[in-house]
Image (tube, rainbow, N blue to C red):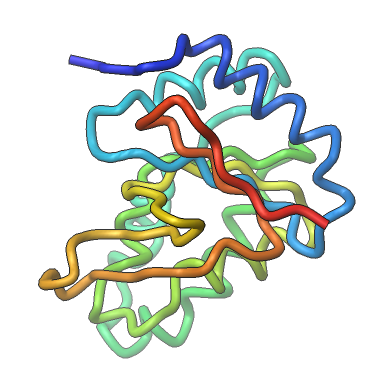
Amino acid sequence: MIMNLRPTNSITNDILYRLNRISQLYYHLILVAGPVGSGKTTVLRYVSKQIDSPIINLSLELSGRMLDLTYTQRSLKLRQLLDDIIDDSISEIIILDNLEILFDVSLKQDPLRILQSLSRNKTMIAGWNGIIQDKILFYAKPEHPEHRKYKIQDFIAIDISNQGSTSKEV
């Protein structure tokens, strides 16, 4: 069951509005944050239709490309694999969903830094399983091995789990 406190079209309009202003930021990255079941995928689908850009299921795409690699090779080649996935898209705006694979501790990567780096060349919108509190972006609970927290800076974060949105803009 999908539960949103804001109508999906209102969130979509918020994302589309911010897309028009994204060039002012160092990273061209919009994260749509909310817990599992909050409607992130639904929102990304609406945005996808509005801007005519496909959604990339990142965990599915990346895991398929990693099948023949050892654990060590996976962490070493992750960035190149991600670059290939992004380059394979003909769209100027990349929409990513299901980012969970980036948080796999065996990959020894910083998921947000990867997304920021990728968003230097193309505008990205990504679903983020987590919450925003006091302009801090969280992924997983503190006791979880994949737990991350980041200050919202030089990218846009939209919290769909409540009525407000949070962003840090230039």
